[in-house]
Image (tube, rainbow, N blue to C red; front, side, top):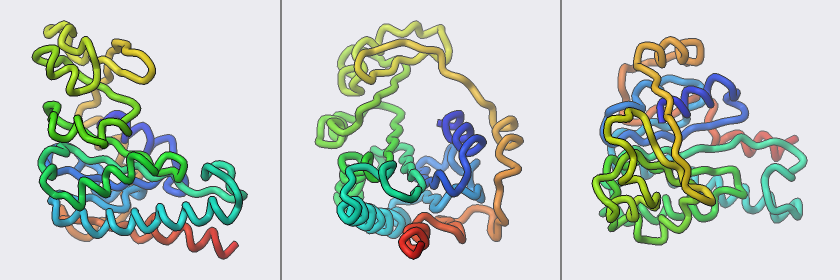
Length: 226
């Protein structure tokens, strides 16, 4: 996750990419606090409700735009809208939060044509979550080594239990078929160094939610006024 987010931030402008980050373990995504691309950084379930509700409203507005212009994807609009990526680290912590789970399912099922993409991370596959409608809408699945075939099946990556336990960073990805690959590692120091040019002014060290001054939820209106 650290590698993916850092790469996107380095090679994509804030006008092209907006991030809504949820770090329920307070483990890794705090590194992205203050980054220009980040519209929300949440550390507790209660802080997810406002940005998720705003994002759902943004999806409705984007859907209206597609209807108005007679197109089926935001890339066919006569103007550009930023891609929005929602990352939820340790989804199992909020599995009893029905409203948040429903909104996450909506992002995953309806978001792609609207430029909204959902990434869910879990330390261990959770059958209660992944055997639901949510799993059906997670088209790309990546897994490290699983303890057994049952866990690999729950994760949706058959054969993940066969990954060599001694091979650090080996993972399997399923898109149309399952393939094994070597994941990259980016240590914390190197990550901070890469991200430092993209930091906006930070007023407090670690807020429950940080909303950037230029958020995704104001960009649409600007485009509509053009």
